Amino acid sequence: MQQQQTAQKNLRLRPKPLSPDSVIAAMSKAQAREIVRQIPGSPNVGEWLPVASLKVDYPRAQRNLRERWVTAHKDKFDPNQLGLLCVSIRATGEAYIVDGQHRAALMAAVGWKDQKIQCEVFRGLNIQQEAALFLARNDKVAHRAIDLFNVSVTSEDPNAIAVTKIVKDAGLVVAEGRIDGHVSAVRALDRVYTSGLTPNAGDKALRSTLSVISLAWGRLYGAYQGCIIEAVGFLVNHYGTKLDSKTLAAVMVKITGGPNMLISGGKALQQADGGTLTSGIARALVSRYNKSRRSSYKLDRF
Image (cartoon, rainbow, N blue to C red):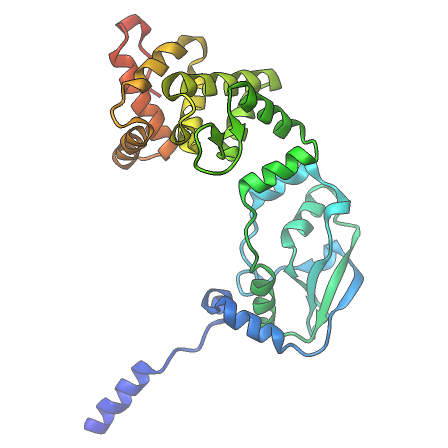
């Protein structure tokens, strides 16, 4: 009886074999690098393969396709920026994408599925090696938003140049560092700028947003956090001429604790009512705004 209990205990302690679907999820970056290091031979670089022939082994050796990324890049499609896809040709002769499924999906989305693309081709890999290669290839330092923004300015991207000018006109500068007058929340700036139906509307929305924050808290670094910029930008766009910018700024000035207290209030509303932090901050501002206005000038709740 004791031997049977011991056997059952050992059986419970024995690790379960990994299912093929858990290959990526169970593998650490260090394990992946070691597996890749031991892959024999070298890939054939520059081999042309038909896009239509390329397959994706999801979820065993790939992550889920982000359709939103493909949609967002359709209008920006440039074949010169595709680079090499990393592909594994298995014993069956089928070609599976190891790294580059979004670029392949983008080519299909713009009508280039019948074209060929240059690939870095491995042969004879097993599923574990494919998954390890994918993880190792994607173990990169993430590009910071502000670095990408600065590069966009250098490449004379119209939106980045316009946003930079608007920020400068407000007496501020797009730059990192917790320094008064610096604005590093470039994603928020871009979202407000591109929120208008026309470029002129976006320009006006961002200028009004920065004006309100500046009237309230001047060049204080903490006032230009992304969630505050987006919340004020939302109110500017949502209410239009019904929103009195000076009144909103005056309401913000009176918040004891300044920007950080506003964010805390937004978080409380987010937890109570759901939604995003940005919407929570916006609701907090509308509530404070309405307390200072007569009934006919109050803002409708959104």
